[in-house]
Image 1 (cartoon, rainbow over the protein chains, first blue to last red):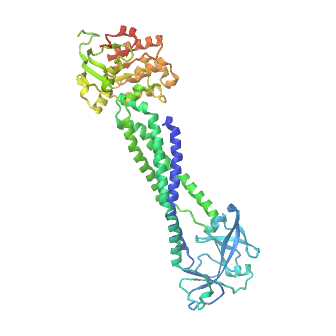
Image 2: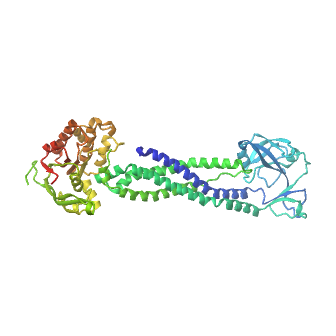
Image 3: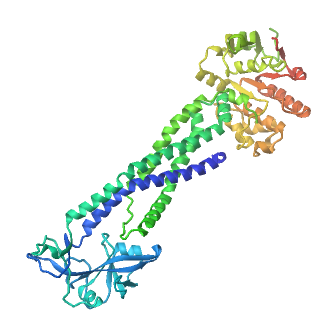
Length: 340
Length: 221
């Protein structure tokens, strides 16, 4: 094993590279599904309405009025401002699970925004209105599970105060039932459960071609790399393999001597590179998200790690089979012809 | 056949063995009806110049190459009729090989190189005793590149002997050594023969080696 350490180090690097590509391809589908599921689970209400003008619905039911606004904050890693939605809710809102008080100054950040900005409760954040350049400072009092968008939740009264609007101002609704408006033109945006599913499907369809491509690339890398490196190990040791045959070693014994070590290194490399793969995926998505206005939490289900190791080992066993034939073909005469 | 070395069992017998290389007009007959017998425990030296077929003889006796005709009987077993797997078992159980260029595994110590073949035997020699016999006890933890040519050849002999083979095949075992070291190695081979009673075939082009032999064959056969 020691005399082949150069090959084995390359094997580890290659295993990492192939595992990373494979993980990248495989992780997208479960990550988006997980994202869409968590959006659905954490939705404040089934329907969200943003209005162009404050109008009343025909069937208010348990709908709640809210104030919606967009401000920007500086996102240091990307060196630019990102847009953040502000939701002002009423004090006793039954759509928001955290406790909002008109008297307690402060805001809740969606977990995506908190992660993206690296903000924690107690921090103070600065925002700016991109149209007026007016600046706002708010204190973070909590983080809430809301992965769908970069959002700030706060008291409607406080938000209206902050934006210099009338206390009774509103421009949206949260509702678990579909609302009917006399003037459909007064609606700016409506988010429904169907839209959420559509959003997930769209994301999945845009990325689904990537998965087989990554799978193909990774398997090719696994196969080529493992073939070349294990071939190197066997070729380098052809004289000694031949010598062992001359001494009377049988093929399974030789295979055990030369391929067992390689098998352990392959399996070890595949397992040991998993934390690096995880780190690489987190880092890659961090870089990708620097360019995105939203936040897509990285979600790697455990079974993917097992799939990575299984794919790598399956590729190796194909190669191993080929090399067993190579070992069988090494002539006894190699030991007699070769000279040190 | 004359009785030698205090033994009277015919251990080794080749009858009319033939071996050719090449085809058509390029075909060369290297062994042409070679016959001989050896008693158990004899040292046989095969003398001859390069290309005379002595290494081929060693290879066919060692089951490394097949013969075109004749028979090779060793310890009552006709090895010319054995398949590849059985020949492997024959080499494992009965033979020890010593090569001119040692062929030691460079990343294994002296002791580990010998242990490579110890593994093959159900009844190996005692390795520490063998290391003392070979004069390698002080060098047992050294790697081949830390040894002189003579010490490397001693290690190769140890590797061949550890499984206590009935037949030791030596191909130009002093070919890469100086005069004094060659002499030491040959003294060692005689000592081994007396200690372990292995039948030994030595192929060489070095004529003085015949003085240690119970039997001398010259190519031309």
